[in-house]
Amino acid sequence: MSRRKKIYEGKAKILYEGPEPGTLVQYFKDDATAFNAQKKATLDGKGVLNNRISEYVMLRLSEIGIPTHFLKRINMREQLIKKVEIIPLEVICRNTAAGTMSKRLGIEEGEKLPRTIVEFCLKRDDLGDPLIAEEHIHAFGWATHAELDEMIAMTLRINDYLQGMFAGIGINLIDFKIEFGRLPDLNGGHEVILADEISPDSCRLWDRDTNKKLDKDRFRRDLGDVTEAYTEVATRLGILQLNQPKGKPNLSVVTNEE
Ligand code: 5GP
Image (tube, rainbow, N blue to C red; front, side, top):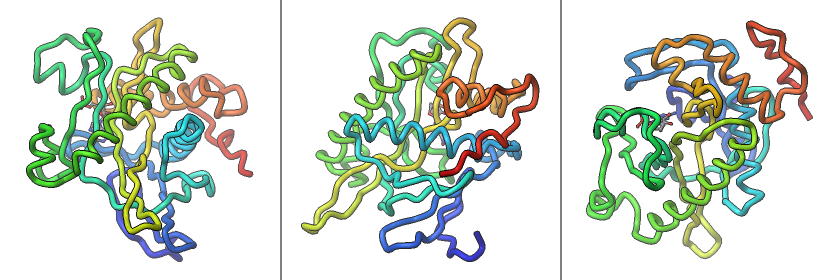
């Protein structure tokens, strides 16, 4: 990896210059952080699992017409993506109360929301990614009205599809966070496309029968068995090819490279 120029290093991923103009290589680290990086750990194999899960989800979403940055998986930890200008917003979509919404509004975790709610946070680590209103987005020019409309429409479509996809494997999609980017087009304009990742790091996924958390809350809340939970998600999605022995996941099964 050192042969490539590093463009950006985030908490869980690194972006390297890609082999062709307009491409980047997205590398998934094993690092986990929570509470604005106050809590940190390395979770063996998390990057491998998120690379595969995010690849799977992005491919399914492009099949239903969502434009994404994903081009192809290169190896266990890397994928080739389209280079975009990231829109500095985290778009959060919620079906069931949990996390900061429960804290902020005093709604018990697990309470089904009366309808799906889309929220926006400003991507600013130094401020702890604060919740913002659409008014802020317009006033400060972080996205245009048209871009925001497109992001909301895509988010709701993604939510509909992913709720069904996860329901099919016995998982409730509680909420998730996505990011979008601007991809230049040939006319001097640009298209808004889905970027970043969709994985158990960025979604809340609860087992339908037991409500067991199969996502990053296992790390945030010290529930243990974090990679085991991510492995469970990958196995149910049919990404892992072999039966897992009980206990520590054998990540070598994730290596069926093309
Ligand atoms: P909450 O606002 O309740 O902490 O998070 C809502 C949803 O968005 C959860 O699924 C959570 O994992 C995701 N989310 C919110 N902020 C971030 C973030 O900075 N990074 C990641 N990976 N996910 C986030």
